[in-house]
Image (cartoon, rainbow, N blue to C red; front, side):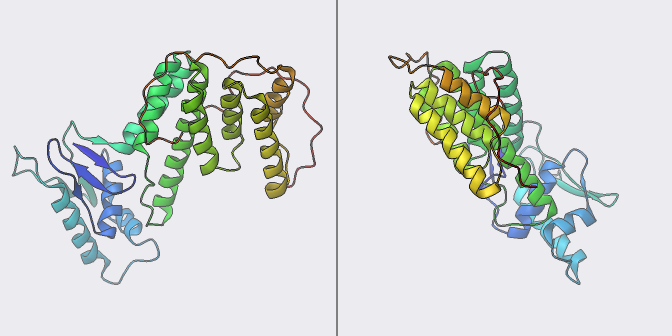
Length: 292
């Protein structure tokens, strides 16, 4: 069983068609119950998540109705029809899922963490595969139609996880000489976070891998202009170091031969703050005055 919380909220039982949860209130309740299933969710917390702008007068009965929809959506195990998947106990709701159940955002978090470790250890092919898997699990946004403190904080955490995975995938692809995927991952990271310097550094590394020093330098200039115009600041020392390293590197006479390229999910468009390869630490450019 696979539970998807990024994008359309669904349960995909093994061997059968996906089941969609249409109720907006049930979607957000289901998501929190899934992610907090180890310890359960208090009734008050669940109500605040479902109605972040204020509880209705009859919120207790309304919450029971929402919980009933979630309980019906999850259903009982086929081999244990007497088991109730969602129970109320001590003022908390506890969701019981089969031991083999997978949750997309949890799979993404695990894959992204392992990808970062693999990259650190120099296992670039493994890092590329794992980071690509993390991005694939997070193709959709987390509960995009919902707002509220819990939803927003979870969405921000997953957005950051996606960006980190995109950067890891790009840097690992550059290390493998896979310029095509290196650039696609970096471009997607820049598109999603246009002020994120590490994403621009990934794009610089991707162009450098492709033997296109001019585009790598142009990427830095774009970063410098965006930060100056929108935020009134200069690039960070890490970005300036990557730029100066490019200036010291002569144009290659030929494009590098790519190493073995991992087959990646074709839908992907593209964790480290430092670029690949890690540049030396030269004297930074004279900075503009930063704006508080």
